[in-house]
Amino acid sequence: MNTHCETSDLLVFSHLRWDSDSKRPQHLLSRHAKHRRVFYFEEPIFGMTQIPRLHLRETQEGVHVVVPYLPASIDAEEMESALRDLVDELIFEEELAHYTICYYTPMALTFSRHLEPVAVIFDKMEELSLKHGIPQELIDLEMELMKKADVVYTGGLSSYEASERRHQNLHLLPSSVDYKHFSQGRENLVESEDQVNIPHPRIGFYGEIDDRLNLKMLAEMADLKPEFQFMMLGPVLIKDSSLLPQRSNIHYLGEKDYDSLPLYLAGWDCAIMPYALNDLTKYISPTETAEFLAAGKPTVSTSIADVVHPYATSNLVHIADDAPGLIVACQMAMAEKKANPMEWLASVDTFLSNNSWDIIFDKMTELETQVYAKKSVPRARTKRHIQPVSITMGRMI
Image (cartoon, rainbow, N blue to C red; front, side, top):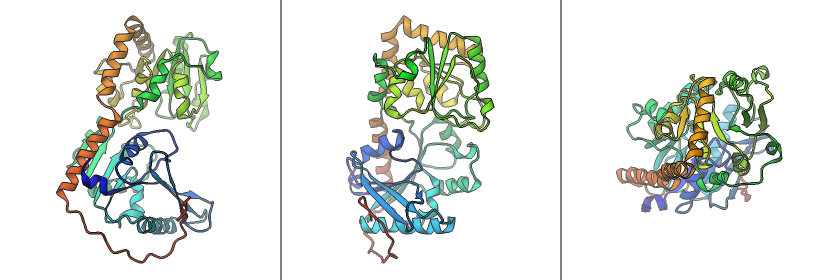
């Protein structure tokens, strides 16, 4: 790794909890932590303190997770001021002289735009402009961050194409998969109690059950093929519960933790992604596509752009956009794997190995090195006096 990357600490602002499902930030930042100090600044937790403070802990991967605690009664202006002071205090206490900032959320600009890092990275996980209910303020902040960033990554082709005229140093780096974890789904695992007694064939989906799914089409599939058992894992987030189809062969098993997902996948015959085709799904890049394949599951989807390319064009996922078509696609996908299981799995593994997390990390490191080469590294700034803020490091600071 380039010397600048090794000596430049990484300050990360994210909208995701570190202890949530293992996603793109966790995979990439755990690799960064082997070479440099990484501080992962989460969104605040309200109501457990009367004085703004920070809780710091180090994960087993070496990442320093920073959680701000704020009073419940704090207003928006006070919150920005408190977070700004807490970030400044963190930089002061941890002696972050030469540091790089990586943003996963533009909202953090409201309390961090005053900082003077060596470089700014924006890892753009989603396209906010068409996400349902996104306030204009957040869209404006994303535009500001695009101008501020030295390098921008996108996790999907559709997002890349939507942003390519907005930044001159934009790079498509699709997310990979935790192959070791999800490939357990190929084994004969002991099934969970809530699935073990459901007959086959099982057609499964996990993720948020919300307006991005075509639930009407799911109901039509269940009616067309009553012997298919549809396993729906994840939180139900639709506002109108009457829109949630109820059929004897549709099974809502609730939200599952990351570690247990291979247990469910092992018992499926096929995976399905019945997404609606609308503005909510135009730029999505479903990470479960690679996870289903790593688990050895034949996979079927509607024509989501980032699933069509590269998965369908590589003959790894079947595509259809109506209930009869999806039923046929499921049958074809299962038949293809059954006819040549070793050949099918070999093609999956070859595809996934060409886009591992290590490869993505190395590409990001190379791009960051190029940014450093074009910039002069600033001198360490004299520590300025900061209004004392109660910070504890759980160490609390």
